[in-house]
Image (tube, rainbow, N blue to C red; front, side, top):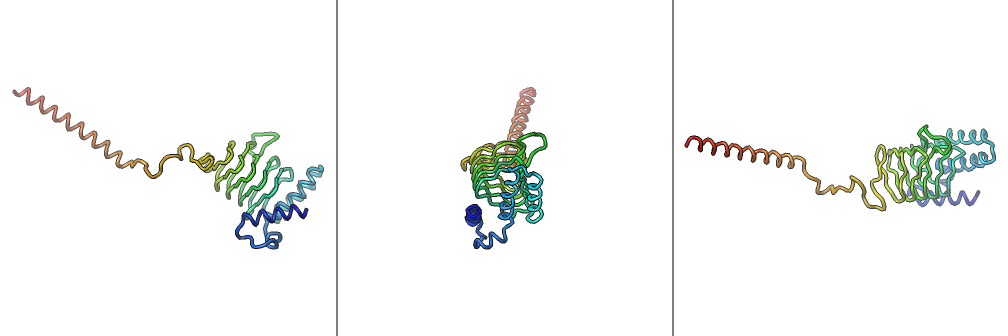
Length: 219
C-alpha cells in the first residue's frame, strides 16, 4: 500500500506543476483520494463483495465528485487532475501513466453487452469534458482533445479532436483534410473575381464576333 501511495504521489508531482509537495497531494488532491478509494472497492469487487464495493465507490463519488466503478481495471500512475465529473465505467481498462482531466466520461453507448467500455493504452492524455464511448481501444501515447466525443478506435501516437472525434495527427504528422496548407489557402474572393473576369472576357469576344458578322452582312 505504501509503495502504491509513493508511486501515485510521484506520478502527480511529475505531471502537475501546481503540486508543491507530497503532503499537499495526499491531503488535498481529490484525484488521489479517488484512486485510493478505487483500490479498496476493486479489491472488494474481485472478492465478490459487490454491494460493499459499490457502496465504497459511491462514498468516493460523494466526497470527490469522481465515480469509478469497482469493476474497472486501472494500471499504475493514473492522474485524475481536478477530477469533478469524471465517470469510469465497469468494463473500462486503463493502462499505466494515464492523465484524465475533469468532466471526462469513459462509458458505453448502451448498445453493447459484456465489454461495453473503452480500453485506454499507456501514457494517454484525455482532455477536460471528453467522452470516450464504446468497447474499443485508444492507443498508447495518444491525446484526446477537450470536449471531443470518441466513438471509434484510436491508433497509437495519435491526436483526436472534434464531435465526433477524428484523428488529426499520427506521430506528430498531420493526416486527412487537416493536412491542408493553412498559409497558402486559396482566396475565395479572388477565385470569384477570376471567374467573373473570365465570363466578361467571353462576353466581349461574343460581342466582337457579332459586330464583325453585322459589318460583313452590311457590306
